[in-house]
Length: 269
Image (cartoon, rainbow, N blue to C red):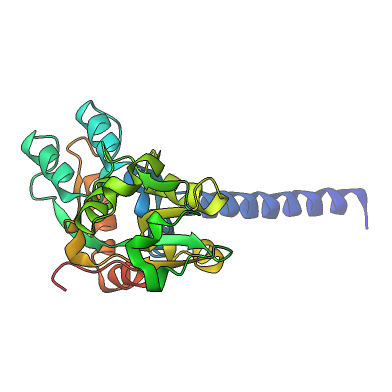
């Protein structure tokens, strides 16, 4: 092949490579999320929400979702002071309703998504028979520390206190209590051995690691105030349509099925 033919071939190949490169750039651009949603979510949602967000990403590839987990009361305080979250999923719907009352949410954006459940959790290595003893297990001499979420700002912490009081053990075990910043941290205390027992969310006890490593006893529902969980879309949401899409997905049949799989009851049940 002559020098001129080689030059022509090189130009042709360069042109084809340029077309392919531009096509790849367009493909990458199309795959890059155009909108990022910032979500503040109650700590009991950690595993269920991670699952739901993964499902949502498949159905909405142009939307990226970042979730921060923590105490609902702390999130309420942050959102009241302008924290840059687009959606709020609270373990106590009253925090969401207080944001509505303060005019900080989009009109008609409040929703109920689940009802939380409370359990007593201990590692499988524990000698405690939770199914036989129930809440009385907390009074056992082997239990020196009981992990709960901080009742000052965590709904599950308030529920744990109420359950211990209604079942008659609070005064006997009050000095054993250690407080996590949120219910997920309380679960970590129990899982790591920093506490012998934890009073935590059923949704966390049913997560693979805790289910594998421990056992739990479900606290009777009448023993604590109903944990109606609800959320809102903030008035400052950067993309209200995208925020509604995520809300609607969680309230859809698939979203509700995922929540139920992680131990949540559903509104109306």
